[in-house]
Amino acid sequence: MKKVYWRPRAVSRLALVLIAALSVTGLVGVEYDHRHSSVRQPNYDQKLAAATLASRCMALVKRDRLKRGYEIDPNIDPAESGLVGVAFSPVTSVSGHLPSKRASINPNFAAVIYEFLIEAGVRQGDVVAVGYSGSFPAINICVLAALETLDARPIGISSAASSQWGANLPDFLWLDMEEALFDEGLVSTRSVAASLGGVEDRGVGMTAESREALLAGIERTELPLLRAGTFTASIDSRMAMYKKAAGGERIQAYINVGGGTVSVGRKVGKKELQVGVNTSLPPAIRRQDSVAARFIKDGVPVIHLARILQLAKRFGMPTGQLHELPDEGLGYAFFRTQYNRLLTGGVLIGIVASLYAFIRSDWGFRLFQTTAHR
Image 1: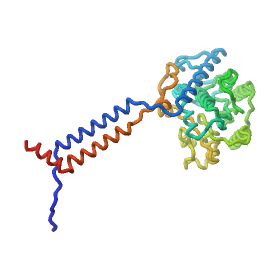
Image 2: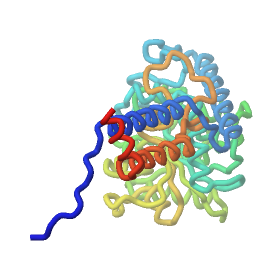
Image 3: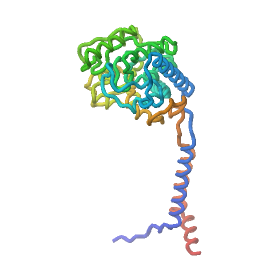
């Protein structure tokens, strides 16, 4: 048996306590600095301009709603924004999630969308295809405000129908809101066409009365109606309309609002597409047809605006019940807390140095041996 000529020294408990104290103190210092330091995010001024425009647009929609005689129920819409609809109406397509609709009424989503546009590579003058949803009029407004601020050229197709709590007042659809914003000069573009919306973008399952109310809204706003007899034909008609309206220019991004099946696919598509910028298709939906899937396959980034509560939480915006519209300039799109790299690196170096000095070096060993014999 070989003899052991070296044994590791016993580590002093005092050394371990001091190293632990140094580590905890450093961690507390780094976290305290992180929590109390905010870093202004890129494109701050443009994001603030987008949020400010969105706020003005929301105020106009509220005024227009009240002029049309639709009162605001503070029990449903505590912020009294005018952008939350009713539980049921002839133009209501499917069930909706009221907390999501309430959380969407935040002009700072325009800043989030501006950030997504920059991430997707969209620049001034670029063509952007948009699928607007009647279910989320506030998010539609924020999309318009972001595109207007960036000075991009949107090609929008709107769905007339809405889920619960969206733009589901029969004489005040999203199409009417968009028209009011355009007529007032707050935005410079309108949708190029509209569909019935609802299941498969064709109002499947809706009554004849409902379909008539939706058709009346499309006719009232003088938008071309996209008609299709099948799910695939609905996708084909949208893609053809986007291509025609682009006039030979390349579409640089596609923005989808909500969870329309034609836009993002059926149940799996809605779930698998990530909220935000998508540049590739998840494996689970590579064989599933949709407008978003076709754009991604053509190399066009897709900005998916759904799961609003998740999106709000991700960008530090309220997810609870709002009693007033948030001020512009709030949220992680404007300011983020970031770790101080110099401080974090210094603490790490200090911990490593103390481990070496107190445990591995002769100096540390002698120091604690001397201390122990006093």
